[in-house]
Amino acid sequence: MYLTKEEERMLSGEYGEAVREAMRILVTLGDAFDAEHMIPISSVHNTMGSVASAGDSALEYLQEMIRKGARFRVSTTVNNASIDLNGWRNLGFPEELAVKQFKFTAAWQALGGVTCHTCTPYLVGNIPSKGDHVSWGEVSAITFVNSVIGARTNREGGYTSLASSIAGRVPLYGYHLDENRRGNVLVEVKAQLKTVSDFGALSYHVGTMVGDRVPVFSGLRQNPSIGEYKALCAVCGSFNAGALFHIVGMTPEARTMEEAFRGEKPEEKISVNDGDVERAYNSLTTATGGEVDSVCVGCPHCSIEEIEMVANLLRGKKVCDDVKFWVCTAVQTKVMADRMGYTGVIENAGARVVSDTCPVALKDTVVDMRFRIMATNSVQNASYAPWRCGLQIHFGTLQECIEASIKGRWTGRT
Ligand code: F3S
Image 1: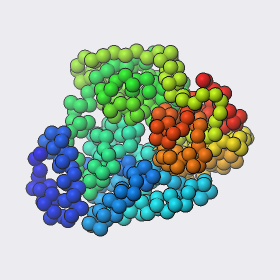
Image 2: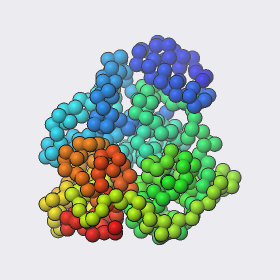
Image 3: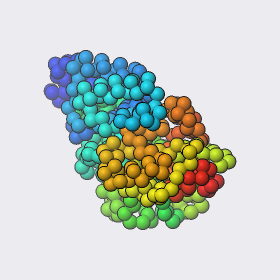
Image 4: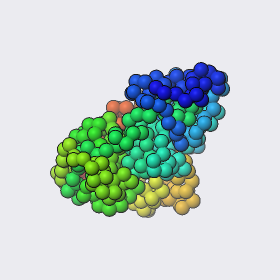
């Protein structure tokens, strides 16, 4: 790979051991993907925020980089933690986990990371512009910046985007290049989508069909809500190797069908009807019977509008004593929810507004915290939680999840 004089100096160790190590990782990555050169980036979002998921080795690595003098060159946000940093004790998180997470968070901060601990950093200040090259992890967030914002990132792992934070660069390959952003598969949506979970079910259905190709949606109603966009980002995020879609007439690189396909013909056309969406609901539901011990909304983390919706549905109601109900969000959004009175309404009903984390970031700790059979309106939660946390899932609409929390039983679709 071609390196500038400056990059050669970085690689030779002239700027210290941490920069040398970061460049070594990026050059190895670039060589593996035949990148011609590096490109400067404007931001990083690092997926490695939870010590429970990343492991002790990640904590040791961050501490080693601090000892080597690392300091981030570009604005870097950090994904979900293993605990709610403010409310962990009240929520019943194990103390041992909290102690370890605080060390992990402190290490990120020492490097210059912004520990917002959210998977929706684009809702709380890390907002690239169209055409920016960035180095992001966390599949739903990557798909959001690529597709909805029109910035450019590959699916970065924790260690490669850490290297990019230190070096301020990424190797130029994959989604950074025009030719890999062309639509491949036309998806004609004939299903009537009414809810966030309908968008999630659509994304699951399409994601299992397109592989790593770029789907181009047509027929979606204008202006999906932020929650619907987030659900759609699961299309590439969870079910295949891609991280980009286009919506004709809506997303930045698809003002027209021709632009979405860069003037070429689609390789394949898929049509999605109501029956396909309904079958996706069935596939995502792994629980049998009506038992529910937990409800989780906010995967990816809730926007303020989604929290308002939950508050309106829970106002004056009472969550069953046997059910844990988490509304997961970024700490900044929780501050706004507190101010708007939504947190009060939700917590008076017996649910909790939880910041910084989510059940999946807790990994197997969730079972110790008595989560076993969870109702969720999130397609990502439904797809991750069974294999990462061993949970059984009822996948349904927000309304069905709220009803389950109140009745203490799942009475939605089966
Ligand atoms: Fe975010 Fe956790 Fe879901 S990291 S996307 S809330 S699994």
